[in-house]
Image (spheres, rainbow, N blue to C red):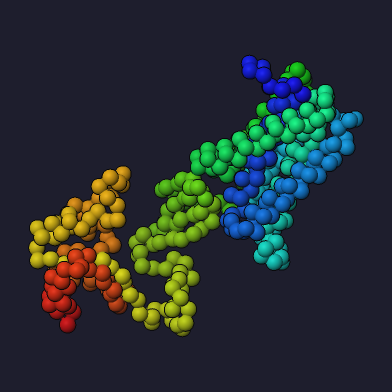
Length: 391
């Protein structure tokens, strides 16, 4: 395998080993996103992912090395990439179903993710393991130089796959779309290494596998669907986030799994019964509604709106400074602070009305942090005028 020179196009062997590195590392990053809803992102999950990928690659290297002398050809390389891409289409289509089924297996938590990892990512990674020994055999030449070049090009591909998937694909695409990109990269490699023969059966195979990938992505996978009207959706650094309205209930989904929900018409209703027990003290009560609830709030009390505005302008913005780019977080008037909704700010009568609203939400006690401390005027007004409203 000749070393790449400036202006020289990559050879078919170089393209194959580079794309195998991109695809294998991209699948490894994608595995974490697919497994997270059921198994989390613990060290056991990632240790399983890394271990299975290394084992599959090692087995592919071994078997490919033994067969390379008699079987290596560009046609077989193309078939390896197409088989990998077709399996990725299956992962897109059936990934959630496989994860859901293996989640029910009676295994210790540390090993629970291994069956899903092995079934979903073992076979395609094993197939990609054949690529390096096949390309080394096809390249010929000095054994040491060829092996070193194969390792170098494959490692560069792995770096591109790791960084590209992490910093480009994950923040912008869904799990299915990332799978489509990785699958199409394998299809592209198959087309590149089989280029002289694409007019025949090889070309038809490329088209069929590409269409299978697109169909799997459009279908969206077999599994429970997120029904309702999507009001917000984005890809975060950790999960796919979606907010869905169905009837009067708004639900937050993370990677397709329900995380939390609220009743739009009755915000204090517990949509999920278990949320009544979120706070530890509630676990020790026969009826969680009997437990006293305490509201922690920042408070600022003054005689009139002008003095409140002056105090707010002096105290805020907190905790950021004048050079912050969070302009939408800046507070300059008492009305700005009240609209934030997390603070009690106003004249004594206004603060008393806000406290009534907190009480109506089911809170029995208040813990107050006076924003104008160490000044005591706000505390005096609260003691003399606000508390009188509740005596």
